[in-house]
Length: 512
Image 1: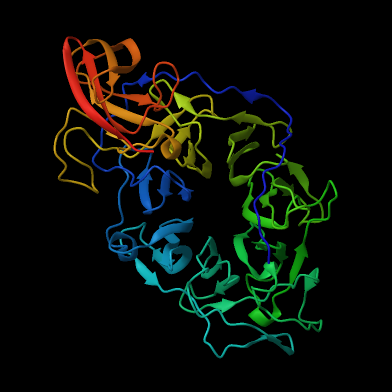
Image 2 (image 1 turned 120 degrees about the vertical axis):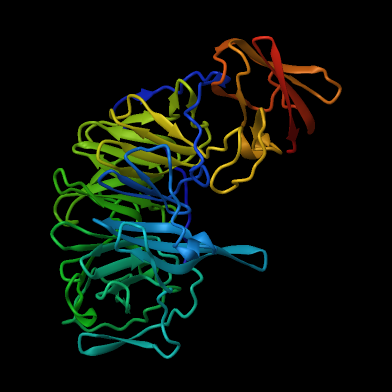
């Protein structure tokens, strides 16, 4: 099995937003809060009404509050290695798929940790262990025949990448574990048979001769799953798109599937690896992101179907897209090259390479990983923090890990008071791109920041003469270069912040 990600040339209609010119001292920053998010990389989110859940520690935000609360009773996250891999929501109900990186022999493998479930809005949690097969489960009954299968008996390579439920019936896509279903809200699970590579349908009336082994057929590698408003189940794998009109209610040995693979035609899939499937309630269109499973034939991009996969409209051809969300006919797509917004249901697309506000920005190298829609906001999870908008992307609000200068946050509550700090520190330009310096203005006036090497030779001055207000918090950014654009040598770099006649000093360790 060969699965590769390949960057392709990108063509799309519409116009492109230019990357903004970024100031080096920005602010004032948003008010400081003790209840901060846990880290700036946000790869998974879920939203319902005015509630937003974000990973990796499954934190809750309500009504765009400054505070993100932590589920202390979700023990596998609060006191264990669990991280949010997927989430599905209904009123008062949260079904969260958990995973972690299992390290063995110097390599890291994404591993299932099961599920956390709450039916009271996140106050109390039940834990469901990873669904695995018994070693003697070497056949699966389908129709009137026995299909030979290879049991999945370890949680490695079976994280719950996607989860969805309707009433008591839950589906999850778990890579090596394929597509699994529970009809009693997680008490018991069954592994659903999927069509093999050379079959376009799977129906219990037909006779089949294949081995259900995820090592041999990438259509058995589950990555995404969705239940649409009509009760059809859509399952994305590394080998295509599988659609069932009876998987929600039929016995496992009677579930039928219709499989779609890339044909190379303009009305087909772009690629066979289906990463995310989303339904737009505006018109019932089912959108999905396509990645490259087979190099040389597949393409990346986004497709939408209005006829149960009989035909597809192709969008953002060549772009690696992670997630999608909708505001009526406004479509949002998050990917490696920024955020794409279509104001007209896909007819044209606008690209935002870098989100910025008057008091901050997402760094240029960030990937845009996840999307969620609350009542009146769209949220974008990146590798450099959260961004949200309530006006279709015209203006933005940024949320990052908030570590107050006075005291710590909910994860480090006993931190000492400081007048400034730099993060990340030590700083690697190659790894981090830029370092941020946070400080509180001791007086009102014009601020400047000067950087010096170990011999106190001036390296660079950042935005000399920026107006600041006493008591407000600001951030400066530095990209690791001197005034001539040359990368500075490894070692300590000292900074002096001057504002209104007072100085604040600090140190950055450059280590590349």
